Length: 131
Image (tube, rainbow, N blue to C red; front, side, top):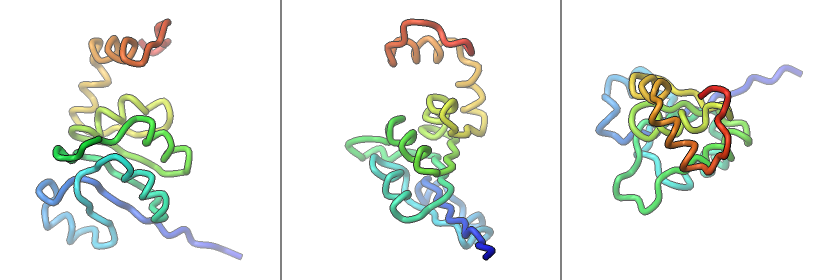
């Protein structure tokens, strides 16, 4: 039997970042409020295949963590990140399969200070070969 995979795409950006024309161009996409903690796991539960992260909820008590993104990737989600929190998490999780896009991600990718911060923050005791 041939099964057609139905793609479910959810973009976390907040309504102020998503122009109405984009929403009209992609009527099958789910456009959601900016991301907060637990949204990735909820997306897995909701049978979403592809997630785009653009912004975080500033009023949220906890923002999305790299660990939650890694859990989503392990569950089979394809996760893209751009702009604010998406680019940051994409840079942190790129080796696990998250894809970063856009100018902010490109700047993080090139940033020596970001690499040093990662080493200190994550407690790594040796330099990664990509550094």
